[in-house]
Length: 481
Image (tube, rainbow, N blue to C red; front, side, top):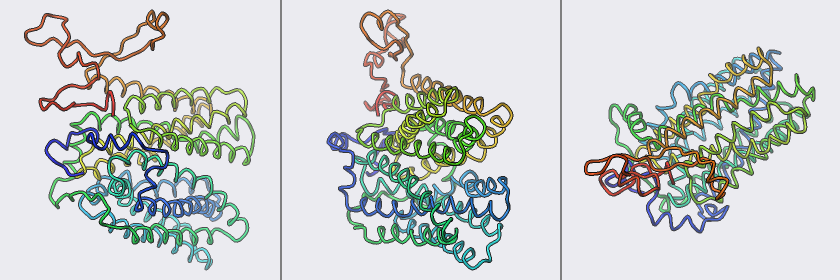
């Protein structure tokens, strides 16, 4: 994955990489020893992370009796990504990723152990939890882009889509296990033991990193230390529609579409009156749908932009449908496809953005990706919470679906325009020939020496690609990744 001439704009792996992906199976990236060690370690630490999230919120509520205090704890954990996320990407591009991950994973484990000692000794105060939550957020600023981009060094571009999908399945599977284990620990022996197990769980990824065969890594050239690297990353994304528009869509849906703790609690309590058991079931069903979506994504060999936009649009439609569901059981059943579409969108956007990025810039690109996705939570959460409290749970959930759908449609049109395509609505062809009613066709662009209305030479290709003077498609992801 060297960055040769023109690599900075190459939207997809080379042809040899594409040949390898045709034979991918659902778990093909696990055949690679280094990634297998990484995945096993992450499964253990992800379970511990979900345990700590539940125990942390419960401890804060126990100490203060305030839901606002719980919300402040969550905000402190995510706020660093919003404020400093881009700087984490600069470090990820400058440093050796495996060594950097050894440091960040060790530091994250220490936060759990410190909180465990304070809680088990009976000296914990709420400001201790605030401080450790903020410290964990600051470490995540560096850990997240480094971990995201290290996947490509372990598996290479041919298996990147599959590995990203399995990472999501890994995280969502831990989401099913961790809260259940945390609930048992909290009720039987207290929150401190959940913190202790989470701290110890980081021994698994640290051990996996130490056991990796460094000679088998697809290492990329590190960016030299220089001034203006953060601005350089922003200019790089701004000049490439195949990166800019997916990141904008991820930011919009991450901010307004992924506020399920607000909506599910409101529906459970105010609309259906189902109590804690009903709320737990909704979360389990959504997590199960997310796992299914990630595994289905692992079977795909491409990360098409049209799939990303389509999944985002269907995600919004399903949210709007659920907002109007008349019964609890119909509402609960819709959590499964919502989980599938949410993860399909996220995985397709993540792998597509990584593959479209130059390896030397990938850390900064992914830090921006995660900043708008995760960093939108402190912004969208209060807004959607206010709408839900003021106008009711159904209007709150419906507004999130409308914003998700509108964002998908606008970004889809922007990508089509950048690829030289235009929408075409043909009702007759849909009825007579069974073709899609809405399709995208090449725009007719007059050039010198052609009659007005004649098709542009590049438009005649019909694949949504425009030549950039080098014979290479300038924006292939808009039509195909």
